[in-house]
Image (cartoon, rainbow, N blue to C red):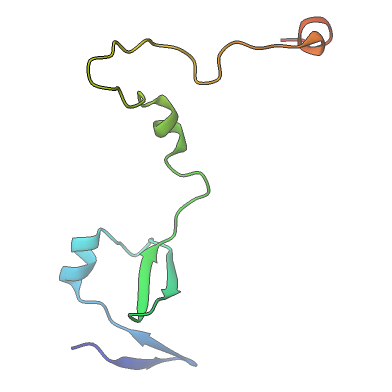
Length: 88
């Protein structure tokens, strides 16, 4: 069983190596702490927009029996400024 230990002016918890390996943490992992109804949740810090690029590249869900067409997410669009003023 884990318990709180004095670490400088703070208190700390030693996490067993088996748990660290199971969740994929290492000594460079930044953590966030969230208080929940059950207690304290320790989770890896996520970068802003982490995973967005892969999500946008992934194909959308296909309905059964429907042929999926490849198309841009936003479609083609431009305006007068884009056509006349902007240098591409």
